[in-house]
Amino acid sequence: MADSLHVVCGYCDAVVGLPAARLGDGPRCPRCHHALFEGKPLALKSANFDLHVARNDLPLVVDFWATWCGPCQMMAPFFEQAARQLEPRFRFAKLDTDAESAPAQRYGIRSIPTLIVFRGGREFARQSGAMDAGQLTRWLEAATA
Image 1 (cartoon, one colour):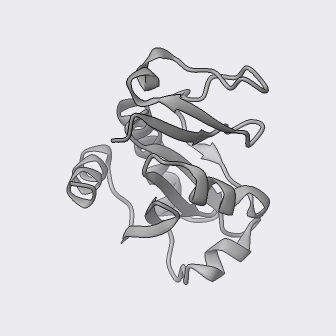
Image 2 (cartoon, helix red, strand yellow):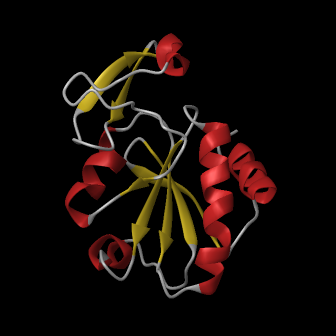
């Protein structure tokens, strides 16, 4: 991990530079003063999706989901649990594919839930289908090892 990292604020979309050693110290956004890590996934929109993918130096795990999807609803608490356990090593976000279809179309999302890990602005790993917290954690550890 680099000495300094960029993290995009989930509230105001400011790109915040942080020393890597201070990630676990409860950093706050200097613009809006919200905590940068709250142990829960960010809700992304088409308007800020590319910014979060391109400018977060942490691996960004995006859950492509929809409100009508039973497996998506089943996996949601496990995704939140993984966010609580794995932040700030990973950044977690959700994108509702019905409300925000452009990113889902661009990445060829054909089934949901689909998880994509982005690193350095590019897709790094992909997994379709619901997972429990243990499976999700193991998949992320293996995918980013």
